[in-house]
Image (cartoon, rainbow, N blue to C red; front, side):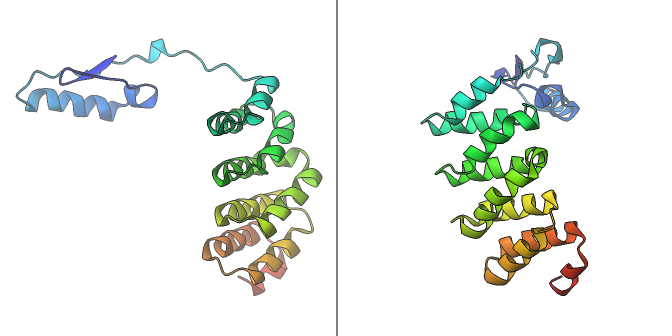
Length: 186
């Protein structure tokens, strides 16, 4: 474990290997009145993170505990997109808006495996979710899917909302679509 001025630091991953952290600790060792210990490199002690199974992710996302559901959504990103799509489509209906946003943001990648199933779910989120961050994430996913009906959905929502964050996400999505009809809105 690394130590700074005699105090153990529970650093891991990037921070423990960072040359910047090492330089700061080394400089502090020469400046301070107390004896300070420089950070040690411990990259060889890291264990690879095991890939979660479908059953583990399903169990976590179905849990009553918010923390476990959040872990399940985060672990879904390590599964094959075709395997995790069902879990994420279930997670976007969670009662917690932060978890809905975390799930919808992953649909930009995982939803491409089955755009026909993903599109109605994210379109419903865009039009009816109570949180603007979830709506903005849904707008990003719709633009990423690039289906023919995307322009109509995004332009209709742009005209009916007053939320600046959602409008900005819709404009970015319309620019990403590259549809010539977007020029009037842009």
